Length: 419
Ligand SMILES: Cc1ncc(COP(=O)(O)O)c(C=O)c1O
Image (cartoon, rainbow, N blue to C red):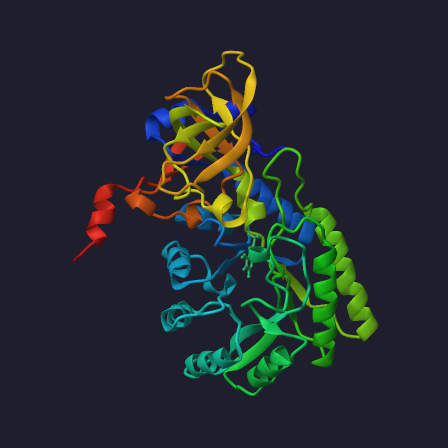
């Protein structure tokens, strides 16, 4: 499966701009993001799910340009903090099309949500109902809420990515009655409207079966409540990080899940709810490429290729054992490929970007490397470990490259240190 952005011309150029040129102009490491790819994926989702709703999950990657792009493509937006909401607000994303998530919403998150007037708040604990209701009390219209339900579906993914099983921190259990308790409490609050139910069963899910099962369980619960207008099935659609992998095809997902919802609603005799899905990774992952410069090549038990970034700009291998491919760009020598391990510059032996990947035998310091499929949960998860400043985000489109987020500097980091 293709793991490069849609506009990539082999790995050497994206959006009509040579990657070597981007590295020269903006330095390395750098995240490159293909605007056309993002827009294309938004359209794929809207088309496959029409007339239902698609909300981009901002946690995957968010900056002001990204908010604008998803707005222009007609998607809703899912945010999970006051910070993400502030970004959306700064470019005027319509509040009624925003959902606020979070298993632990701070008072500031909720205050920001009410201040901007977000369309839906997804309740994730029983105690949150009264807090949200109290804030909604002073308003003219009731606040729409969704109750996040744990449907006990195991999507067979990494443990840290399974969020629909009983033994994890998100949602309210259907089986234990916590979801029913939260629903009762919402219905008992005049300042709230129960718009519907929500679930998010995990991440990197390759097959639609788990979604269909979760949808059926939530529809059955809705039927007990006499039907509800909305059903939000979360995100988690897999993408291919390497050519031998496959992602979740959105049309297959839509056919299967819309079919399951229709069937189940007919069986229970309730009207079909309006669906929302919340893809993050599937919209933006393959739009991104990270550029690194090789700092050193070390021969030992294996060959280590040391680059000028690492776990501070990509923590996913250390967190989930994620695997990537790496390509050298800009210098073609015809050298045979050998297995090498691309590692970062941080003070951790686990600071590995890609283990045992084929690279030309003559790779050397100064070479430029590109890692595809790094648009989601890379910039968003970046840290300043070792006081390393975070890379810029560079957009490309139609032969033009421009910065969306500038490179962080040591001065930026020192400015925060007020002691
Ligand atoms: C509630 C919710 N919706 C959507 C998403 C997006 O998931 P993905 O980027 O895997 O599609 C997440 C990810 O954690 C989530 O927690």
